[in-house]
Length: 114
Image (cartoon, rainbow, N blue to C red):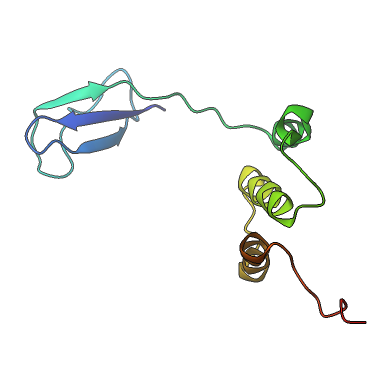
């Protein structure tokens, strides 16, 4: 079932419309102002990836070119990218640690003074 995007000629806003029946589609209209004067837009095609395809793309050496395992900022960027790619919420505490690594250049756990 395709989702078509339309641009309203009156209010200049975009509307996305899910088409449930391709043979007998409902007339398109603006969801914001109700106008029937809309132009269909070309939009990108999205295809869902399997978990295996996501893992393969993350393991691609070409994606790891900017990784420096000794740089906490670099590792934090990779972790964020991995979380986004896998659709996982890493949690606020992990997100805060990654932001801290990006801000001050490292994460301390209190063992440095030993």
